[in-house]
Image (cartoon, rainbow, N blue to C red; front, top):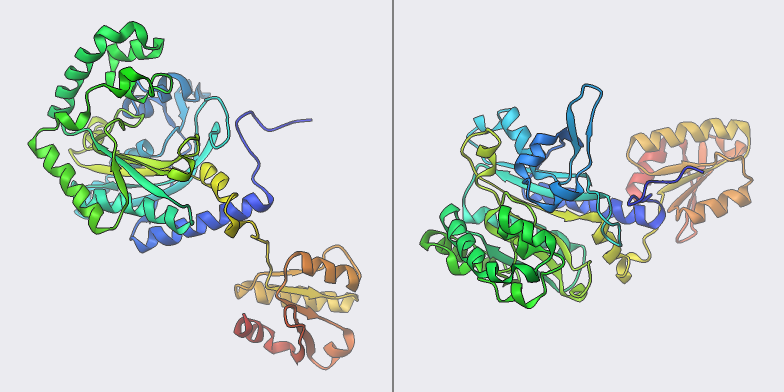
Amino acid sequence: MITKPKGTVDITGNDALLWEYINHLVETVMKSYNYEYIRTPIFESSELFHRSVGETSDIVRKETYDFKDKGDRNITLRPEGTAGVVRSYIENKLYASPDIKKYFYNGTMYRYERPQKGRLRELTQFGVEVLGSNSPTIDAEVISLAYRILELLHISNLQVNINSLGDEESRSNYKKALKKYLEPHLSELCEDCRERFKTNPLRILDCKIDKDGEILKNAPKTIDYLNKESKERFETVLKYLDILDIDYEIDPNIVRGLDYYDHTVFEIVSLDYNDTQQSVLGGGGRYNKLIKELDGPDSYGIGFACGIDRIVEILKNIDLYKDLKKEVECFIMYVSEEEKLHALDIAQNLRLNGVITETNHLDKGLKGQFKEADRLNAKYLIILNDEDLKKGLVNIKDNVTKEEEKIDIDEIVEYIIGSL
């Protein structure tokens, strides 16, 4: 028997209903914030991710799916969404317009890591990228957008953990202080951290092994090394979050796992899951150097991503979502061949007018069709019989009130739409 690859899942049944619900809510909220949908390839040139995410990041060093295609080109399955959007922004010269670009995406990412609950090798993320603006108002908008989506999903005790890495000068000063502090403790850190010390010491703060140890807890804090401009910018972002009524906590240890971040970085957690891998629901930050580093103009960017897989695991524990049911609005019942012809025609007319419609495809008798309609939670039953059809009538039953009514066959669509 052929089985699915390790670290992947089939999404069916109630899980699929949850996914549909999340996707619909995300799209609705994104549009209300005036974000435009963007879709980029699942695979890209390996160089894109190695340059953007960073050769020293764990994602590139350990987790990317890299391969050569039949043209001997180095290809990588995308591990995150930002790099592809920025590449599209540059390649398609979307920066030529003076307007700010606000994009949202929803798609699969691929990371070769140890599978566990809420952490898969094929994962799905929704997120945003805002390109062309350095305004702190955009930082606040991006953070509030992620926060509000999770809030609308009824995930409780949300908190934004936020930090600033500052500008290039601030980061440089901090790296020097961090290296000076860590050097005497190198032998006490894991092998990966000793390697990160040489290449990118900020990655040490994100280490899964040493993160909670005393050495890193007592390490210098990024916000203590912000220059005047970076500090004022961070304080302005916090002020705007206060105005937007976002619950946040300054966390100097947040650096995020990718090399392209500067200034604002953040994660959104649910404090109800603070001691589990499920606590971090999403995160992101500003990347003002990335566009230029990928051979684009000297412009600005900020974004976030949230993992749908992890959100689904949380929603399963919320009572509100335990009774999600597959529903149809109309179920058309028939027995004879003549009734079947009318059923097919009526079903098509209803569907083309946006009514969720099902009919009998298994040649069941009426008793079996009534049971199927109940399993589908059908709101209305259209019960056909030859005698009524000769008179141009159909019998419609409200499956909740159990009231029945005969109407003209040409008025079915109008009647059902008016009753829903």
